[in-house]
Image 1 (spheres, rainbow, N blue to C red):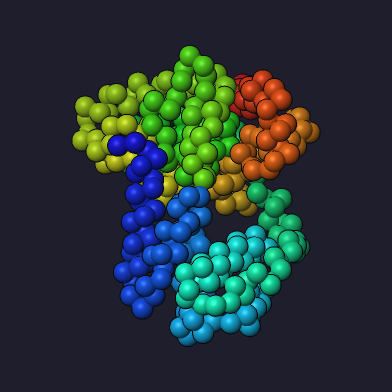
Image 2 (cartoon, one colour):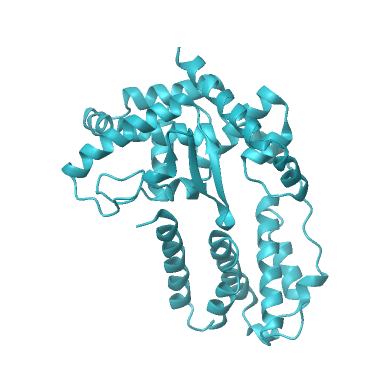
Length: 332
């Protein structure tokens, strides 16, 4: 099955479980469906924020007032700036939906200002640990090669080493999100053009140039994958990355693989998001080109879009080559 379709079906299934657990909130399904033109991942996140908010209010939605929104947002003051802004955005959409659907007369969130981003000392300290240095990238890749844990664990890891190496290199050298990695199919890789086509948030389809070492790792994995198709029963034959059970490698499994092989990196808890941050940080350190980094990270901005039109493909290939050289140099 197509990776994008599987991804969306999983998100819709998660939403339906929320509907089932909240039979007293029949408006949730309509709210969720009203966001289907955008990112389904964002829609699911907003749905979860709204469930918590309505439970906090403890009243029918028709009685929710301006003060309820204000008080709830104030209760989040100890949360991170990015989380508070995300919740604000979700509640603003919900408030608009309630008014548009006639469930509440007041579009209260329209009068509430977006929280200002701020950084605490804790946030700044966390940011310092948000990406891998070249030495840490080297340690991560070495750990994939040698394995980690018990003799049995290392033995199992060895059988899937080509998959895990290709997976990590794709994330390190393209900066694509975990959800986009999950959706990759075998035909997402174009070896002739040296690009991998990923579907990001909001159904944005992007061709990411990939360096030779990532291409080589993908070739090795795809050949190994063909052998595994005969060894295990594969349920999703389109999936680029498959699990030991033959399923499309889940987002949770992607996280577990990244965390497993980064255990030797002291003082940092590494996740797929940190590999994305590593890509952005290393690329900026090499180029000092913030516009290029934003292009490669698929961050939306009208200004960036204009810059992208002006020779973006050549710059993106340069970015891929930079990351490829970083990987090659640390493995010498």
